[in-house]
Amino acid sequence: DQQVKQNSPSLSVQEGRISILNCDYTNSMFDYFLWYKKYPAEGPTFLISISSIKDKNEDGRFTVFLNKSAKHLSLHIVPSQPGDSAVYFCAASRYFSGNTPLVFGKGTRLSVIA
Amino acid sequence: TAGITQAPTSQILAAGRSMTLRCTQDMRHNAMYWYRQDLGLGLRLIHYSNTAGTTGKGEVPDGYSVSRANTDDFPLTLASAVPSQTSVYFCASRRNGPPGELFFGEGSRLTVL
View 1 (cartoon, each protein chain N blue to C red):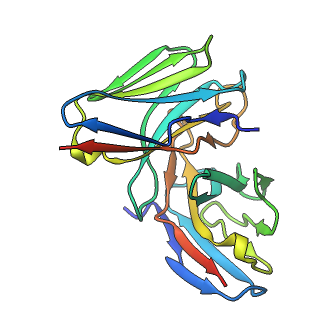
View 2: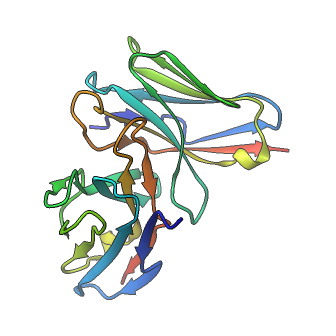
């Protein structure tokens, strides 16, 4: 039973265009969501987060949108750059209602083509 | 700044042998985690510890054990390795306050033959 789903294993985008990575979750108790970026042979690094009291959070070129009714979140990268090519993991937890471990999706491999 | 240090970086192990993957953090984070990453399966939680002296089972705990004798160290032990435990293992710790993100080590690549 996969609680966090990233249904697109891969995505290719032209440099300068928008990248949209999607994530769905099934556990309505999740109240905190994060995106991680992973390069080959490195550990994942934190990118951006959002709590369930918000529907949008921005950090530079990265914006995360949360739709609680649809149990869906998305990461927008604008403009996309070749250095953004990596695997992106969506993660969720019950942070504010009982600190639980993060549950990760399977990841989406983003390729930004110059 | 060291952050999370994992050792060894990579290891080849014969099936049936035991192995301990070491993890040390210098950020005084309360919670620590072990994940494994496998192609097509993403990051799966093996064991976790919310604070020194306590541990919990994650999604895939079988064949693994952990201990948390102090805040800084969180070793993962494979008592009798099997080929299905071939994977990349990541240790992580979680910031004590918001935004509560995880900090990951560089990973330990384990091959069980």
